[in-house]
Image 1: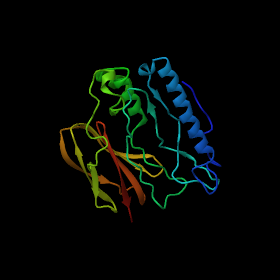
Image 2: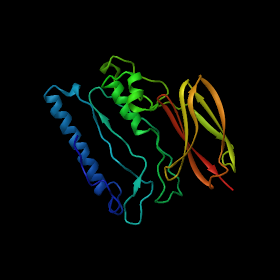
Image 3: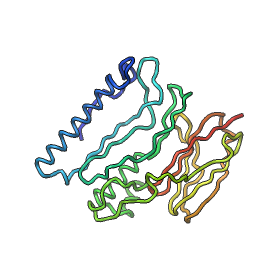
Image 4: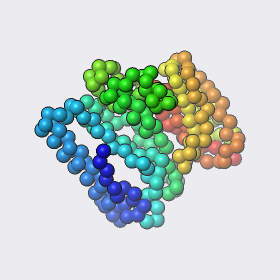
Length: 247
């Protein structure tokens, strides 16, 4: 494991007038150059097929910059997985960033970072699913990160990257209660509700389902008015939608 500091960019994250330049852009350039140099060395030694790399951080950043041309700690952040056997793709949709967001608002989490760890254990280290659930102590979804040839298993999982609507709510906006309508392919199905600070507010659905369409009435009478994120997870498939509670 290697580390690089400097990403705690509460101030002077970008240059004034050009957000593509500055400290943050320089840091990302360093990461890019380092990963390329590392992979070039591995290819020269003919060992690149034995290695998968991953970037991670203990914090993300907020939606909107603060008054010091920086961003504060946030709940969501991208992770980069690289290597010869890694599937070349982007998992997750562009997050919704409300125009009225303040410097304290967060981008909603789409994939739990532990799902990335679980997927690498399964698809690169070839840990069996029964053992994986004991290690991770929860139903963390399997994401198609690594080519199935690595462990001779099929990792092209349906439901990732398509445009199918998996969860909606009606009415939206709502005053006290709203009906969550969701579609599952079967197996463990999870629905979570987060506020704009990234805090888990509720877990309306968490259990095994037969394939099909379902509804659940979410009672938010005790919650303050404002925007919330509802997150659906079923196997590798996930989707995040916004909900609005009004007076």
